[in-house]
Structures are given as C-alpha cells and as structure tokens.
Length: 180
Ligand SMILES: [Zn+2]
Image (tube, rainbow, N blue to C red; front, side, top):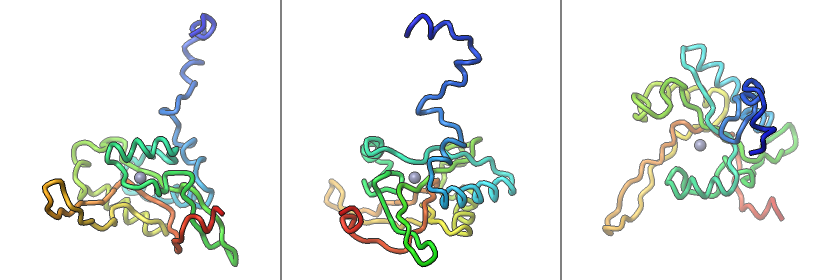
C-alpha cells in the first residue's frame, strides 16, 4: 500500500468498496431489469410484514460457482447465479435472452443463524410466498434427490435452498442451441 493511500482521510476510505462489500443497490443493479423489478417487489412485500430482507449475493463468476460446488452449496455449474447460464423469457411476441438471474435473500437479523437454521423458519416461507406472487421460482421448492452414498445405500438429499430466488423461465434446452 502506498504512503499516499494510507494518508487518505478515514471518511474517504469508508466509501471504498470491495467485492464483498457491495451495497444492496449495487447487487440489484447487476440483475436483469425485469428480474430486478421483481426482486424489489419481493423485498417490499417482506418489509411490509416486518422482515428485514437483505440480498447476500446476486451473480457469481464461474470461479465462485466452482467454489460453491466444492463447499457443497451448489450442485451444478448450470446455476442462475452464473452469468453464462442463459434462458429465454417471453417479452411480448419475442423471446428475450436472460442471464444469471438469481439472488439469495436472508433476514439481516438472522442470516443463517438461530431460528433461520431451520428450513421451516417463517421468513423462508414468507420469502417463498412473495417469490411465487411475483412470478419467480423459489429454491425452497427444490425436490429431494436420491443418490448412492459411499456406503452403497441410497440416500435422500434435501435440496431445498430456502434463501434462493430465481427468474422463472418456461423453456429449457441444450445450452448449445443458444450459444452456437
Ligand atoms: Zn442461490
């Protein structure tokens, strides 16, 4: 760090943002405008009933997604948090390409701790209700998957991702058909 940088008064340094300190507005602005509007409506609904919703991240880079898979937080590179995941959204008579449109929303007072450790916590349910109301998909609806464990037995994995909200899309095709 240069002497000049260190000499900056404290109040100007406070405004410097790092990757991890993005404002809520910055995170919203990373979203597709259609999705941004829906997310705003979801936040308004939650605030109206007393919650303090906070977006924790919006887009992930491919590298961040690989990290998320390593941590077990995500199971696929085809995630709406990743920019290269694309889908089609009906826009009048045309189809619009949308990319990387997912957010994770928590109540800032709980995060993932305390009552929020339970997937049955009321905040998650209210988030799901608000997401559905505004035409979005909610990660709390993900169906359990069966997988074979190291012990050779079939286990059922709870895939519910209760903080996750993503753009609803009507059609799924091979990625190549868009990217070619
Ligand atoms: Zn998510």
